[in-house]
Length: 288
Length: 205
Image (tube, rainbow over all chains, first blue to last red; front, side, top):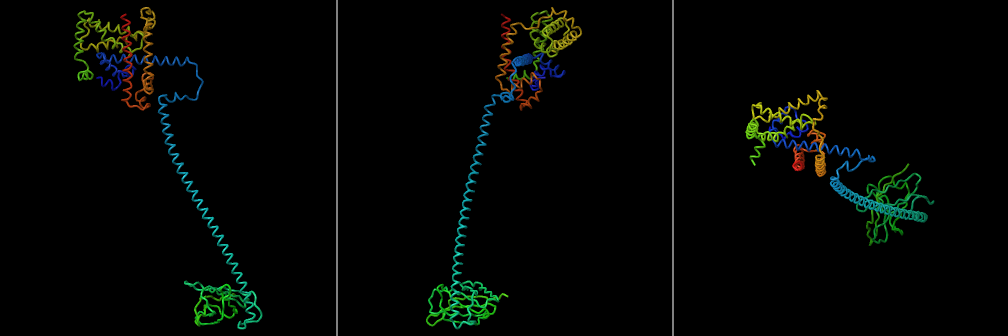
C-alpha cells in the first residue's frame, strides 16, 4: 500500500468514518503505524470530522431555540444561493433581451405585412370604384345610345309613314301600315361581320331597313342594290338621299324577299360615276 | 524532489526498520528516553487504531496501557522481530481493545466501582475555550467556501453519504470531489496545527 493508493481510494476518510473493510483496514493500519504523515492526516481528518459534527449539533440547537418563523411558502434564499442571484439575474436579462429582440422583429414584420395588406386593399377598393364608375359610364352611354336609337326609329317610322303615303313606286296596299319592324344594317369594314338577322313573323306585312352611311364623301345621290346569295340583283333603286342621321331608309313588303342571305350595296354618284359607299349583309328568316 | 516522491510511493521500510531495531535495543538496555521516544512516535497511531475500533471514553487510557504493554513485552524479549515493531504494536493495540471492551460489556458494574480510578474525560475550561475558538474558525472557513463545496463536506463527513452519490447529485467528477476534500483538509490543517501549537504553549506555561 502506498500513498497514491491511499489518496486515490480516500482510505484516510474511509478509515476515520469506519467505512473500510476489515482486511483493508488492517492493511492500512500496517502502513500508517510506520507512517507519521498518514497518522497526521488521520488526526487532522478525525478532528475535522469531529468539529463538523460539533458545528452541526450547535446549528441544530440554535435553530431549535429560535422561535418558529411564520410559515412561508418559500424563501428565495433557501431555494437559490445568494451568490447565484447575480448570475440568474444576468441570465434572465439576457433571455429577456433575446426574446425582446425577436419579439420586436416579429412585430415589425407583422406591421409591414399589415401595411402591405392595407395598401393592397386600398388598391383593390380603388380598382373596384373605377370599375363601378366605368360600369356606370358604360351604362349611361348604353342608355343614351338606346335613347338615340329609339328616337331615330320613331322618326324613321314617321318618315316612312309619310313617304309611304305619297311615294307611288312603293308596292303594296295604300292603307298605312303601322308598327312594322325596322332593322338597322351594319356595313362591312375590314373584317366581315355576321349578317344582320331579320326575323319576320307572319303578322308583319312590311319591314324597314335603316342603312347608316358612314362615308364622309359628298355624293349627289345614292343608289341601293339588293343582291341574293348568288350575287343576283333582286332589287335596285337610286335617288336616295341620307337623312339628318346620315342614314338611308328602305321599306319592303315582308313577302318581297324569300328567306336566305342577301347583300345590300350602297353607291354614291359623283361625276356620273357610281362609287361604293358600303356593303350591308343581312339574312331573312321567317317565324311561323 | 525525486527523493520525496520515492518516499511517498515506497514505505520508509529501510530506514524505519533500522530505527526500530535500534529503538528496541535501547529499550531492552533500559534506556528510558527510548521508551519515551517509542510513546511519542507511536501514540498518535495507536490512538487512531483505538478510535477506529471503539468510541469509548477510555481511549487515552487504552493507548497508554497499550504502549506500556508493548514496552514491557520488549523488555521481556517477547519481540522476536524488532523490524516489525509497527505490526507488533498494532496487534497489541487491537487485542487490548477487544479484551477491554469484552470486559466492559461483561462486567459494567465493575467499571462503576472503579469510577474513582477513571480519569475524568470531560474537557477542561481551557480545552473548551480552545475548542470554541477552533470551531469559530471552522465555521468561518465553511462560510467562505462555495455553498456546493460546503454541501459536499457536510454530506460526506456528517451524513456519511457515498462519494459516488454526492458526485452525481452535485454534478462533479471524482477528481473534483477529491480536490474539494483535499483543499478543505488543507485549510483545516492550518487551523488544527495552530491550535495544537497554542495548546502546547499553554501546557508549557
